[in-house]
Image (cartoon, rainbow, N blue to C red; front, side, top):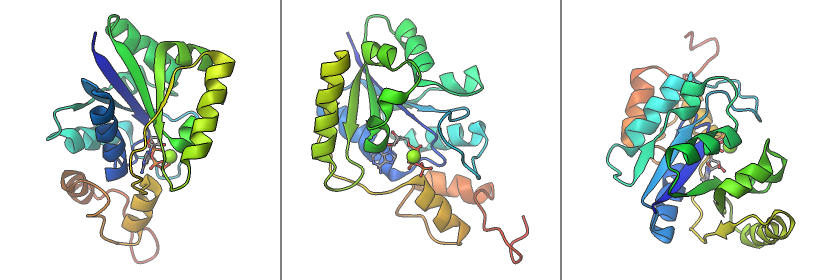
Length: 208
Ligand code: ATP
Ligand code: MG
């Protein structure tokens, strides 16, 4: 039986905080692999500058190129439409019937997951794994995990991975201001963004 991490996200764009969580979980739980699953259309958020799925997928592929334990899955992009985690986990459970799925997410997602479509099926299908995005979040994560365990029989795992406080919003904002994002995203992702003129500054001085 293999241990497979599943890490969904908009990845608009993927950044070092994502890789830090995926890599940290892989080591901590001895996962055989972590599948990064970029959404097609995120169901829960409005994003003004959401790049086409194909660009977000390609940046994920570039980001994991030299990381043998991380891989990218295009299940949500191929399925199209709004991406619901419950459908993705059902599909992956069908593809890997003998393996154990670990669904990885940041604290913000973990604290709202009870409201997601098909939560009870999500909780039956995968171990729910989270870590802090900001300092001081661990106690509330632990408390929430106990609640989900008690109420739904969910299996939760909280790993004290050191916080790497980066967000895609921060990356997009920095790029829109013409700033340097070397510290925030892998070099190959930065090159892709520049080569394709993505997230460019807008305004009177910067006609796209
Ligand atoms: P945005 O600012 O556009 O919302 P984001 O940085 O939150 O982007 P998402 O694609 O929304 O990235 O998140 C995908 C998953 O990665 C979510 O589970 C989120 O909680 C988690 N995540 C994002 N950034 C971090 C980080 N720095 N540390 C840990 N988890 C993170
Ligand atoms: Mg987010």
